[in-house]
Image 1 (cartoon, rainbow over the protein chains, first blue to last red):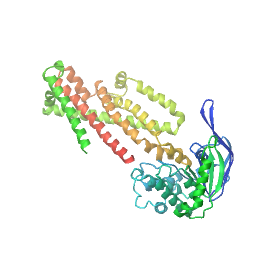
Image 2: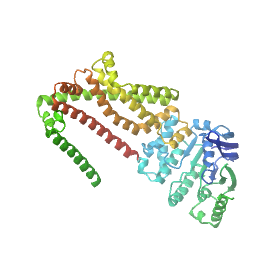
Image 3: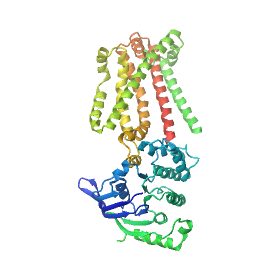
Image 4: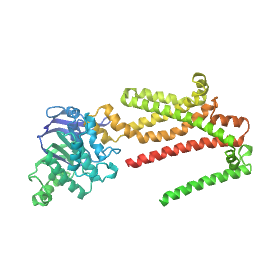
Length: 253
Length: 249
């Protein structure tokens, strides 16, 4: 498992010759081994930027990003990064099974059939091994892409609004499923979301972000013990926390 | 289903209408002596030795067009793959492709006859425009992968070659099929034009000879065969294209 250390990180994007936008400003963040972190904020607040920096898909303008004391590129090269996006990140010409073989092929390893079968079962896709993405529902596609992210037993799991395209009922169900899967693996996880309930239900710690420039407004340690259930979501304290965080997301000007 | 039947009916109706107009124009001599009626052209195919000539020529022209298509498509794809693996070469290869495409085949024909020979000229004149078409199609196809997938490959540490193999090339297949679909008709044109410069056999030769000997129905019959081959190949690749699209949708 991995620890993540962001020190004085800022990220500036150039839009035009003399127009720049500061996506992140002087961000300090430490994520402990085996911790589940949710980055919560409105769209455009830089939460996906953090994820891209940790994944090594982008370089910070200032500051350093370290995963286990090493730059993210090292983690990439060792294939120790699991990543799942909002949608469309499965190879459309491959079956579920073949999509799960991809991480092995990139790592130059023989696909571990038993491991793949186990993951397919873990995410509840048994019986759909030979289906192509176009034959699956949105929720099933997300299950497949989470299973693929777990294929090589990554040290770090990055989830970029993985359920953002799903309806509310499916999303809640997928939250329960993700918790079940995560409890078996306990991988250091960063979840980017704009849904307050999802962040509180899944994370050990919720970081509420504000936009332009992105910075952390609040940090909340979620008090509810695991496994959290549908009953947890009905607790008064849960609702209270949801209201509380929703309020701090509202623009205050 | 009814929708598809309706479409098919419209297509047949359109074809029949076209043939009827052709028939009318031919019988009334609206197009002068060089436009015979459709039935006069069709009757060419009932004469045994004419049919044999057309078949033999069709095989020769199709072979030239097919080989040209294969050669042009292979070179086009290989060039595009090279540009993808070595991006530094890409601007130069783009310019080379544009220059190759800018050469008019009519001007090139005599040069090829002298340098490559009568047999090879139709193949080469078919291959040149196909090369350009497939280079453009493959280049845009290789860049068509979804950005999330590209990020996924980067984040999981894929090498450039792995990306090309597992992501870019499969992503390019629909674009390649579209290019190939346009390529078959272009290759037929190239082969026929190439034969005009003096190939031993072929539909281009039949068209040229019949024009000079005023065998108008036979000339039209040869043109009809060229069009039929082109359209059939175009249709077959279209079917393949749609089945690939369906699998991925």
